[in-house]
Image (cartoon, rainbow, N blue to C red; front, side, top):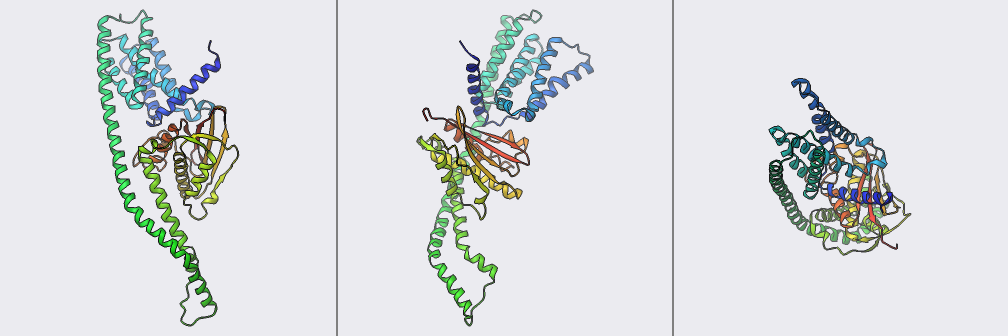
Length: 438
């Protein structure tokens, strides 16, 4: 016998699965809710006023439910924090009700209406565009089945004859096939772009690594003897050596750290190339064997590898408490932290303010790494597509880096979330599954 806790656990797992599924699509919550309010509410009442169409009580109730669902989606930013985590499942409920259920119900009430047939035709395309194809099929059949069940209980609808069912089934099957073919074409185009980016990135990286490595090797050799030249110049200046060309003090200060700066920038180039190649190469997810690791070791390695500019390292505040172990790949987690570091430091530099805070928490079902920067926050329109794999987006927050982070966390059996307030902060929460017995 199920208890309340069992239903809650099932709901939580379903919500997490849906969240992982929609990360690659960046659902347009705001656009969908605005279109829904326009159609289900404003357009309907305008139709009644302009054309004198009678208001059907059942249709009005169904439209009001759809209107409130869209309104709740539009006002998701005002939800309490405890409710925001259920946004993925709320999104799927809204889609199921507003598209397959509602339009199927309209069609079955008047299957001879060409307008309602056209409206029904659009729902499968909407679903395939908004979610992955498996979810689209599930939501489609759930909504259609619910509408047929509700219509069968209503004695005022048109009789659901064998003819209606046959036309309905054939038409629905044809639409699903066409929609999936269109979806597959879009997927192939995306994969083609990623392969092009991978090939281009590999070529550039190959050409750049050789001169960068030569620069690093040359600087490492020069650094051994450069202090001797510095000391010799200072000694000559102190003894007023005749013919000595005086170097301005500011230039001399730059010279004293010149080789360190060049070496840091050259190593930074290597790190950035590694990150970019890791973000576009799918093979990185296949070659890493899972092992038991400590999150503190991964963070420490990422901080060691990142080539900080002067003063940047002091912006990072890491609380080492609540260290935890997880099963996964060190390379994936290190690159996730590197991507988050790169984004955060870029926006701190842009805003001229902020710092980075890292800490760990241990929850009942997962261990969480918190990564927070207090720079610019993230705007609402970007939040909806934050983890979507987009190339050339105008926002630096969106693109290959965060998409890689989301996919890497999925490979580890976890997930990533973002809590943000525009103009104040962005906090990324990385959820790692707990190891049994640890």
